Image (cartoon, rainbow, N blue to C red; front, side, top):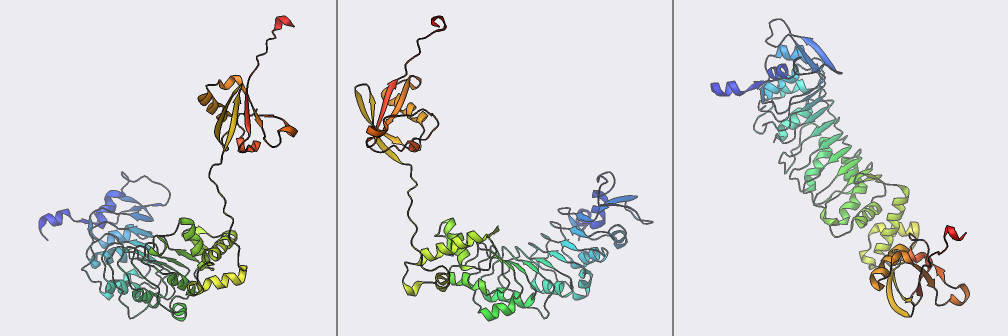
Length: 432
């Protein structure tokens, strides 16, 4: 490294000294005031929170380990994303001097061509959440880390360009969440390996991969994923209902995300949700929304009606299960929700005009319509509805209420709307 590179590289110690000195960081809750050790180049004291966020700071080296130990003994979470760390030795120096570290984010650091020696990996033993997004870190390094993190619960491996999964000599039985979105996994044979690598997995996030099928048998999925409760297959390549049916083979599965898959592109949004729900009887949360008992019953009844006219060989197995539960259902009555119109005769003196009315409109709307059509004043007329069949019994009914909908007057084709001028009251106070 030449002198210019030496000048540009920044250490972890330099950054915390600059960012968390009393002049730049306000004292507040969660902040620990720490004196500098004797002879330290760091300022007299630092205000360090237990959650350190040092992203995009140009860090490429650790700095003096005694300073890290003196200032970071209480730190629980460390975000080092978007830096220039490319040496696991430097990262290990930082981590080894933060004994309570629970969360470590190394995303966006250039780690693609560097190897982690097992002798360095023991320093990660207390880490429970590890984020390696867009680091291009190798599977060998991932396995070295998981073999030396006995308490690891969450692992994030998104955007690393993986098109396959390498197996490890040892599993990581503590891991419960694996997020591996935005990679290039296609074959279920690669996804299957996660069951052997992480036997206690409860949440698997595979969104934005091209996984094109779920190929294993019920016995295999029960054995490989006995504790899986949540799976995210958004924007995957699933194209067959058989793959959705196989999700029922995960014995503990209760949450599924399956948006943006080829299988569902031709359906409406309501059809997608109903057909998925009916196929997944144990799922309690679908695409982020909780499933109520009433919604599930509606979906299952929809499923029966959707398939009941299909030829017997094309009926899914789930159809027969639901028919045994609900029986054969009659088709739902078709309800025409389009705005209703009717044609009436509008009588104004000796003049009669046929007029088409929209029955969802109000009396006030009708007066405006007649004003434009017949050039009538809206505030100088009264309207009466004459039922052509019942007029001899009921007589005319005045349309008084301007905000009342026309359909509430039971107006039908052929009825008559009588328009009469409003008579002004000619009485005045002088006449009384």
